[in-house]
Length: 460
Image: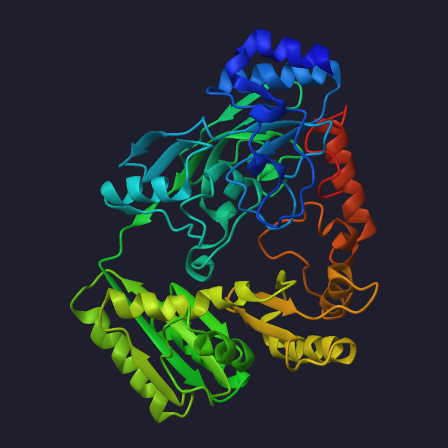
């Protein structure tokens, strides 16, 4: 191991290869807090050539490399072991180009998402990918985990927004295909192999995003619905009559009651006695007509008893207070909190929530200090679950995992909607993928990373 560190220091400069006490504690784990070890060394390359050199040397020495972005993941995908070398992309940052004619943005992988969004907006465009962690999350990590976020219902996952990629393979080979064309069927679309692969097949160094026109109007409302059937009815009407909402966030009453009762939220848009709550956002290009159209849409939904009540944001402050409720930050104050990000067929989501809640309640009665809250994007099949229970002797988070993921399997869902598999969901991958599919994943891994040095132990 000392030989590879010496080789890396000689090639990259000792200031770019940190060891021991010089490695900050933040490089131990992503936001899951599940990492336990600092890496043996931390590399912070400043160029694509340096990434290539680092991987070539690690490949020659058979040394494992764990790529790290903004460390905002929740699946343990960026956690190093004590013998691993961590490769942080944080210094490989910056907007390389905005092509106004093509409607694209090209940036280095370490660029924070918010910085890319701001650059796009300054040029008159929208970069639709949006996450709560936008200020810290890096675009390379967003693409490597096929991030989703709040606006997937209209614009799709990260995969739908990436036109081109540059990737460095395990042996240092640089694959540069910074395509800016929407139509390009010249052979295999290799970028799709790396999007969502969590750094196990190659390290993303540059990304070409497809941009959209910057919206001229945004209307936001907080609604109450009597039941899940009405929620789905409202979603269908929004997709048909509004041309699709830009966000459609659904909250079960257990979530809404807990969050709005907490002093940290400082908002309660509607009373706590409704069956479901929906935050709906519509973005359009007609600043004069769109708000009236949105209000008429909600009025018709009220007249048809699809929703029982609604309040429309009158300004940006109102809209932010609605989103503060949906973000549910009050849940972070609960002890032993376990977060889940799963997908289910849309029509089955409420049945799943009921069944999952019941299974959890059999083990830990959901009253007093025990909580289970359900909320999510819904229109893109995505459901979030937050569970906080008082464990008995010998119990822990894996007991919660077993119940939730078994229920996901029984409802033909996915154990990972958008945070990836990492290490925390690896044992449950078979709940959502067949043995044949997992075997193909192993073949791809063996073909592109024959020594198994890239992010070992993650995903498969």
